[in-house]
Image (tube, rainbow, N blue to C red; front, side, top):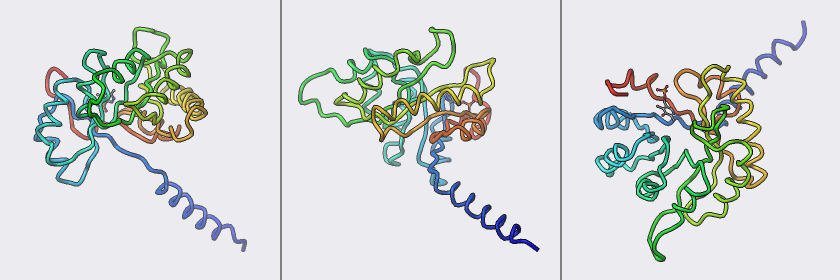
Length: 223
Ligand SMILES: *Cc1c(COP(=O)(O)O)cnc(C)c1O
């Protein structure tokens, strides 16, 4: 007899504890679904919801204002609309250019607006037309967000490219996240993982999973 069985049990217990200690936020992405679906999910106690288009996002946030939900904007942010989005979105996942941050910081002096949590979106593909900043511009953008009056640098966000193993893409993302933490050690969030690849994202340190169809079911036509 050895104490291996006891050590196994102790190890599994520690593993379970470590799992519980890791704070993971599930952002339920409700784009194209009616506000009633969000209400139904909120009634279970869930608080974090994501949308990718203004003004659909604004309409839902306004319709459910009394529920005090946390709204995550995960779609591409147009410079001209960004300040409107920042009025209702608590977390902006898709900060992808210095010009966008300039637009968010601009406005009338004395404008009363909340400071929003912000993630720098990184383009993990080779295609510059896809959303997100390319790796070469990451440091400058993260520094700009860290210096912003209207944003609080929280970390990074990415979508795994098609045609690549998500695990290898998320591994690169984790390295980028580490670089951003040298700019601000508090920028610990990694928004990664959708219905099809959240397990791989979790393995590579995701703190925010953006889950749509696995929870909402298929999106209505148009989605
Ligand atoms: C729609 C969307 C999701 C959710 O995708 P599912 O595959 O339905 O889970 C996550 N992230 C972004 C940026 C999205 O636009």
